Length: 462
Image 1 (cartoon, rainbow, N blue to C red):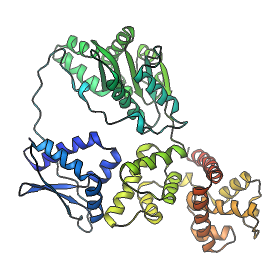
Image 2: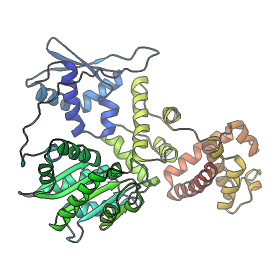
Image 3: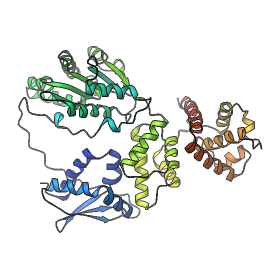
Image 4: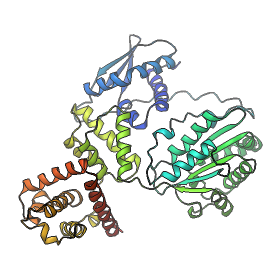
């Protein structure tokens, strides 16, 4: 049983980490602090809004985890304790728990890599053109749908695109379906290296080798790029993978580049990693970003208005972690300010977490007008004309919207460029946001032009 409130809460957090999505944990659980009074765990929330949401959706789960960790029934009371004015919300005081007793080493004892909890599943992996091949290949190898598919390499140039989600989902799915005997092992290249180095130091390499090879049906190794210039560890991993494939086991490896492009890897290991199916996870497109935001918001019990959702999709074009970070910022702001989530709060949160474009990558009003005009087969001057015809009005409003989003120009400067007053620009922004919510063709137009603007901005930033 944990001996102090910080240690108890750390243990509860570890349980919740295996049960809740990362967004829910960051938005609703991590801001909480605890203390024990009168044999009751008092959980302090940053606002009444936060307290009510935790009570409604998470309190029962917290109580269950507290009872399991404390070994007895301990009441949990939620209190409102906002952060002090002018100071950020302080994190929990973490008291490190005593180091666990060193386990008795036996060749067949289950290792942490076998017992590791994997709170990921294929069911909550959002699929789109950017990751469809990687997802289908992962599912097939987890279920052994295709006997000839026994080696898979997942890669992406940027973090946060779903490699870890798929890697852990493979192990979770395989463990659910496997029968005894047989083991499914999950590790990282760093952990593999640390274990191997320790085994060399303690003169037990044979035991280490047996641990990864004997009876193993599936081995998943993440972030192989960590092995750069670690020759001995690379050789050990190469022989481990070769042995497993020779006996009919499955091997999944992830990295941040194609195997042949990872500098510092031995030629034979690169070749071995390239022999199976190689699948890339690309940056999520607009539709995948929309699905991810909807799912993360729903899993955290958050109602995200459609106009806010569309603004996030347009503004955050990075990886899944970027999306989750922005969503966490919005929820935290709503909780601390006790406001409902609306477009103004979303814009406020975006300004805090989405970095501004570097000056050389920023676009000018004429560039936007020229590109929009070209897309709709209009001369740029037509967008600044007095025409109210539909075929001119709609492109003009879209150009104003993009000028607001993609340039550093003020509303006054945009209004002047289009020969309009300030209210016309704000009205154009509202109308474009509404149209893109209600009309798929309008969304396509906006996304197509935005993609071209991205290309121009990237070219300027080089």
